[in-house]
Each structure stands twice: as structure tokens, then as C-alpha cells.
Length: 304
Image 1 (cartoon, rainbow, N blue to C red):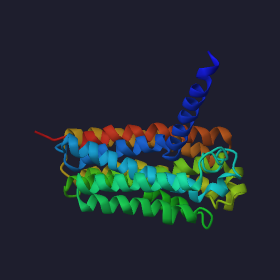
Image 2 (cartoon, one colour; image 1 turned 180 degrees about the vertical axis):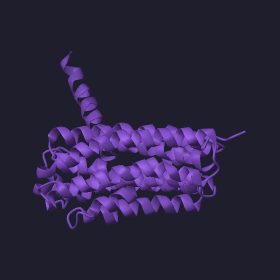
Image 3 (tube, rainbow, N blue to C red; image 1 turned 90 degrees about the vertical axis):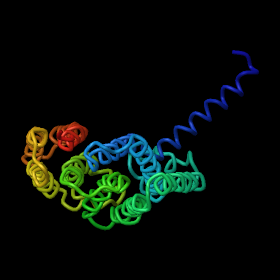
Image 4 (cartoon, rainbow, N blue to C red; image 1 turned 135 degrees about the vertical axis):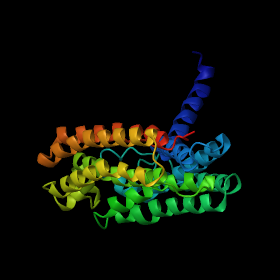
């Protein structure tokens, strides 16, 4: 490589690094799953009759609003993130992105996402989108340093994209959409209790009041994990509150079986809180949740 091309290569490398930093602000893995949840919610709310345009624009709008909330979370917790090993290298905490850059990202993604929800969907979708942002940024995030109840509020905020997808379609509430919302709320407790145990020392150092910080024995987290894992087994029965069909029966049975499998790992974590049981519960929860989306869609499959 000639010396004349070195500055150009360096600029390209710096531009790529900067782009990846902005992408990290959006928490893309969470954002991708949120978009899939909205797609599924649109389908489920309309029993499969939602237009592709509605599904895509609602998902994209929610993705951008979620990116804004994630970016705001990065900025609000920048000082706390510096105390934790797993978050110290985040773009704002490490100083790679300035506060101005982070807040500009927050404003732009919120504005574009809100416009998409309002002008391609309806005011109700926008209200649920803004409500989701507010629940995550204004309630869940500050509660993390105040009370271990933060996880419960975070679970509700994390499930609210279901309501964005539903409201975007203008459909009436049905049993599958309510079950999907309930599953997303309840699933997060075993999932985050496992995370709270794995990173308990980090959380304590940052001042986060997680269940594993306020009760260092791990029993509080273990009780929450097992109780909500058991509840996941029961929730599929809610599908029978709507019209029953073979697809509903199959979906409910498979959802219950998935929940039983996750409950086994929650039970092991309940008996012994250690690195192995917590990581296996975390893995089980990560397998469980994506598996629920096609099954809920199956339950909403139109019966001819």
C-alpha cells in the first residue's frame, strides 16, 4: 500500500468504527427481536390478514423508537457503565461517542420512528410507541439504582411492542395477542434473574439494585425464576379464551412443553445458584422465546 492511500484507509476505518458505535447504541440484537415481535403481533392481532406494508412499517417504526430508548439508556447510565466490566467499553461510557452525538442519535431515531408510527399507522400506535420509550427510559432505567422491582417494570416495558403491533392494525384484542403479551412479560423474570446472578458483582459495583444484590444468597432471584417459569406453563391455556381449533390445541400444547423444558432449568437454578445453572437457564430462556412467536402465529392461523 502506498503512503498516499494510508490517510484514505485510515478515514474509512474510522468511519466504520464510528458507524459500529452508533449501531451499538441501538442494541441491534434486542432491536431485531423487537421487530420480529411486532411482525408477529400484527399477524396475530388480525388472524393473519394484516398487510405486509403494515407489518413492515410498524416493525421499522418500533425498531427506531427502541433504538432511541436504547441510546438514551446508554447516555443515562454512562457513569454507571464505567464501573462494570461488561459495559465499560460501550460507546458513550468509553468516550468514543460524545454526549452530543449520543443525544443526537436519540432525537433522530425517535423523530423518524414516531413519524413512521403516526403517518404510516395511526395515533394509537404512536402513543404505545411513546409509552414504551417512556416506560423504559423514565421508569425502568432510574429504578435500577433504587429498587429490585426494576426488573418487573422492565418486563412490562419489554412486552409493550406487542401492543404497538396490535394497535397498528386497528384490530380488536384477541386471546393470542393477550397471551403473547403475557408470555413476554413473564418470560423476562427467569431470563433476567439468570443474568442478575451471572453479573451480580458487576451490578453491585455499579449500584444497581438487582435481586442478587439486595439478597446475595440468590434465593430471592431463584424464587422469582421458578415461580414465573411455572406460570409460563399455565399461560397457553389463555388461548382457549378465543375460538378453539386444531391449530390452537397444537400451539397451546407445544408452548406448554417449551415452558416445561425451561422450568426444568429454572428448577435447577432454584436448587443451586451457581455459574452453570444460571447460564443454562439463560440459554434455555433464549431458546424458548423465539420459539414462541411461530407457535402464537399458529394459534392465530385463520380456520377455513
